[in-house]
Image 1 (cartoon, one colour):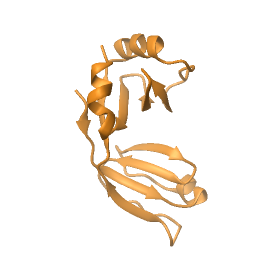
Image 2 (cartoon, one colour):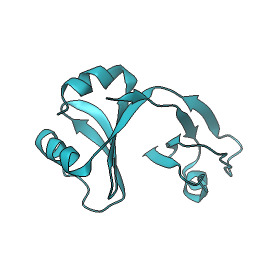
Image 3 (cartoon, rainbow, N blue to C red):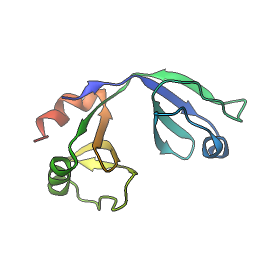
Length: 124
């Protein structure tokens, strides 16, 4: 079941995000060159005096076992999944906008909270 996530939304220049040192154990989703969603605890210091760092609660997500997730994704994605791990990807899954984090032990699925119930209906 997808759960509402609470993290930081960080809008900053790309160079500052490239050079950032993220808190240990955090998950960094680079949504765009100047846009990050950060899950985890700890402070972030950026070399961008105009950076915007705000609480973000508009996403929902869940972890899936890799084999089950890959079976589902391969049947519902029209795009090629990343072959290397770890990897972040985003695109349409089962017809909805989804963000995916792949590593050796899990696939983390994330979507806008407004789409969470609909995505759950399309999941195995």
